[in-house]
Length: 182
Length: 171
Image (cartoon, rainbow over all chains, first blue to last red; front, top):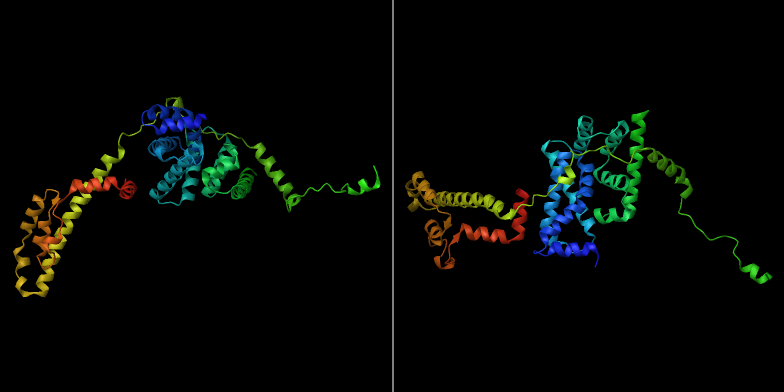
């Protein structure tokens, strides 16, 4: 039995659940945090979403049927939580989701927890101009270096569509950076 | 090697290319080189020791208390408001249709309605409906003998996953 299967069994057993959950958090908090942070950009927001993600994982672990890897299932929850967070915030601020992304990226310069150089800042602004799905695909492929098959399992999109999405995203980012740096 | 064998050796290797491969090759190479020059790190930071100190605050029995706090006022005031509307509209209809009920609305003072609402203890009995609607509208034997109280409604809502989802949406 693999380590993941053992962990899932322990998570689904009320007697071992709490201890197994602590282990799950220890193993995955960092990867999930950075995945969420790239979507919401701001540390405090990423912290909120990460908390909500783990609470949702805890509450729904009984329903995890192992149709996908545990990692993919948790990534999917984290992605959905982050997207819902963004959408809710955009609605609260009475702006479109695209405008919200761009506003968040513009604020990075004054964010104490952003220490990127000029090109990293431009790259984040360029990503913010993309449609939400393309942002996700670009972040997962470019920064997190996930395989297309893994992204496909997380987002429920075919590998072919993901490749096309990444290609479109790359083209737009390339054009954006060129216009900003020349 | 005899001439027969020579004849069987293919002159082409048999490899094939995806359609338009060389047309997009330059573009793809340029894109790859462009991103090679870009940083692979984002520049995001966290407060010191944030991740090493990170703990999840899992709420104990989060649904129960939240469901009760939302459902209680909605049900209590919703039911009370419905009964008031029913009382008022029944009286209005009776007055409209039948002169014998002419004085019924007048007799039902706002003070009486208030008194009834104040004495409302969260439990609706079959007799409450009969008192309001009269026998010709609702036959008492058609009504359940058990009374419908708030805790029964809450228990039903808590056990129903569909209503739990609806309540979760509002939460």
